[in-house]
Length: 266
Image (cartoon, rainbow, N blue to C red; front, side):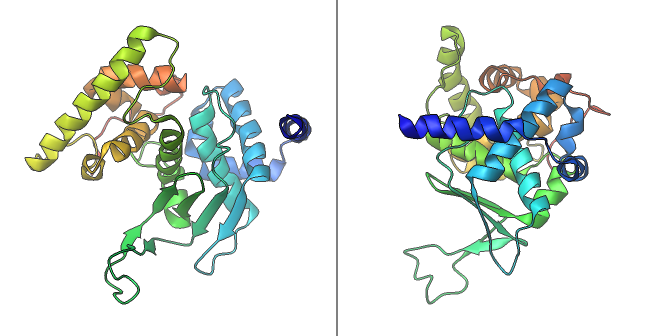
């Protein structure tokens, strides 16, 4: 109880401090979604960013020194997932680990200690109850273009929400019994349909082939589409869009897009 009180007091103090001008410049330069948001949601991003900066441990790997711009850029993109979502600032994520570019994760149990070819190249990875790993070049490239169709920060932090709430195989509390009933069924059907399309080598996929790997990857890919291709998701999968809007409590289609970013991933 005392720890919760101290944490709440510390957060109030952080939120009472001004958001630094140079931090705003980082948002303008590296977080393309920020300019699309109404003012009240921009304020929410700034507030959440301040808390994430203070409460997470930021680690550089591969010779990368983590500077202020990197921390603000990543925290602000992660904050997009919490715009309307009741949360505790990803309390179960302790570390945010940043590599300069694509990194490799050994496959334990595959004799990876002796086999340099048995590791997996990745731009991001979420580790349950511990960390998010990110490649900085992908963070900036995708973060600057909100309609590019991808966002590795959103993808990996969506995994963390899933780890905490079982979103890919269960149903969140949506405040609407009908929506909660539909969630598990709609997600299972859409995932099965996507797997069939990938196995059939269909050329025009809305979701990425990687989303067919398992339900967790499908949910993370779906979240990317919700934020980065909302018009396409609403057109191609209206029920999924409605469910995500009910969960995240936002409507990305209503944001100030310069153009209709409706396109499948290349």
